[in-house]
Length: 128
Ligand code: 9L3
Ligand code: MG
Image (cartoon, rainbow, N blue to C red):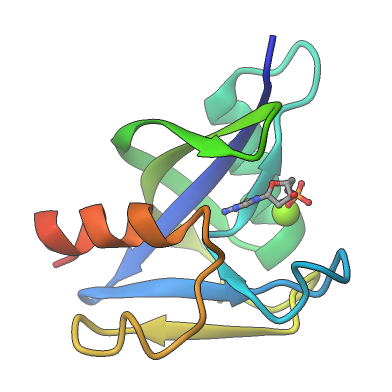
């Protein structure tokens, strides 16, 4: 079974939250949708809510799934949901920086190759 990684397209006031990775070295500086690996015994959705709390300090409610299983290297896949913030203000607890990106700013950051197609689909569907 491939490793499942989950990511959150956190949207607020028509803007998408981008997060700049701090590690590992070959991904550091690249921008991603926050999230991480699903732990054993956890559902994808539980993992994503947990990751948003650990990485950003916010409580989120998940919305719709964006696309299907996105490729993530040879042995992993990425699953993405939209999310809204129920409580808290996002903080870069594990990232180098965070940025709210409006529709015209979506490509102002250097998205990881894995995340760029997800952002493109999201933009095509509308992030408002
Ligand atoms: N990854 C790629 N795009 C994302 C996320 C959340 C993760 N939106 C990749 C980076 C790592 C792996 O998945 O190689 C595991 O992510 P993490 O647990 O280190 O955040
Ligand atoms: Mg992570």
